[in-house]
Every structure is written in C-alpha cells, then in structure tokens.
Amino acid sequence: MFAVTRLRVPEADADGFAAAVDVLLAALAARPGFRDGEFGRCTDDDALWALVTRWDGVGAYRRALSAAEVKLAGAPVWVHALDEPGVYVPGEGTREG
Image 1 (cartoon, helix red, strand yellow):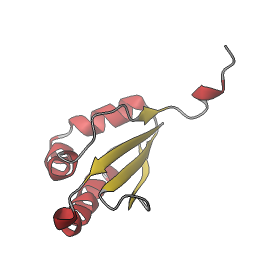
Image 2 (cartoon, one colour):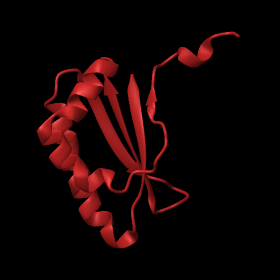
Image 3 (cartoon, rainbow, N blue to C red):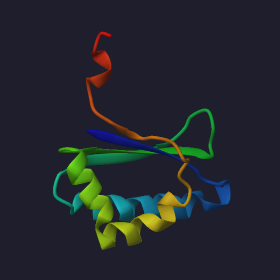
Image 4 (tube, one colour):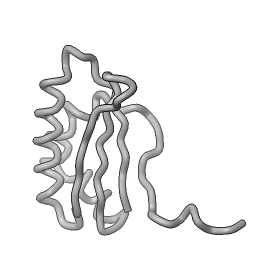
C-alpha cells in the first residue's frame, strides 16, 4: 500500500521543512514494513508539497505511525498536513461495478 500526504508549507518554513522530512523519512525507514518514501514540491504551487511512502501493508503503516520516535519526528512535518484521506491500495480502483 502507499500513503500520500499533501502539505501546505509557507515559503519562510520551506528549508526547515525539507530537513524535517528527511528526519521523518529516516525514522520511518527504521520501522518494519517500510519499503521506500520520497517527497517533493508541487510545480504549480510552491507552498504545496507531497510525501509518498510505500509499505508492506496497512498494519505495518499504522504500527509505524504509532511508534514514539515516528511521532516525535513527524510532528514538525504533519503540522502542515492537509486534512484529507491519503492511504491507498494499488489496483483497488480497477474493479468493475
């Protein structure tokens, strides 16, 4: 599964934000079930960023987010998160109704 978190970051905070995401990705990488992650800035809106992580499954993702070190590393990042759903299962949208 993969998780997409979109974040709105003021320009004045952009440099510190990028460093904080690096710390968060390192904390996530230490958790079981983490496959990879990346983040980037929107080409159409400099204040909009996205963090994408891939996991072995929803359980691994949820357990990782519950870990104290991830909560501490994530706090300066997630304060900028948009309130929207962001966890997806690949291929689930291909079902016919």
